[in-house]
Amino acid sequence: MDPIIIISLFAGLILIMFFIGAPIKPLRFVGQGIIKILIGALFLFFLNEFGASLGIYVPINLVTASVSGILGIPGVLALVAIENWII
Image (cartoon, rainbow, N blue to C red; front, side):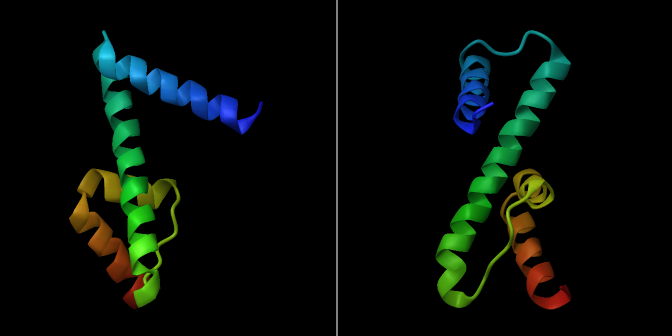
């Protein structure tokens, strides 16, 4: 399938979940997790854009997006620390 179609389907499902809500609890939990991962990916995107002048770069993948989405700003700072001093 074309990536545009897949992204459009996911965006449509997210919009439906925003307006209607998930009727069953596990589906709501999965939906909230996906939204947190997307927000974490946005955190990392903005970090990479604004941190490029400082030499800060954290790759955006499922693990780093999950960490930054679930933990928020402290998670992003932890990823920067791990990237700079440990790896």
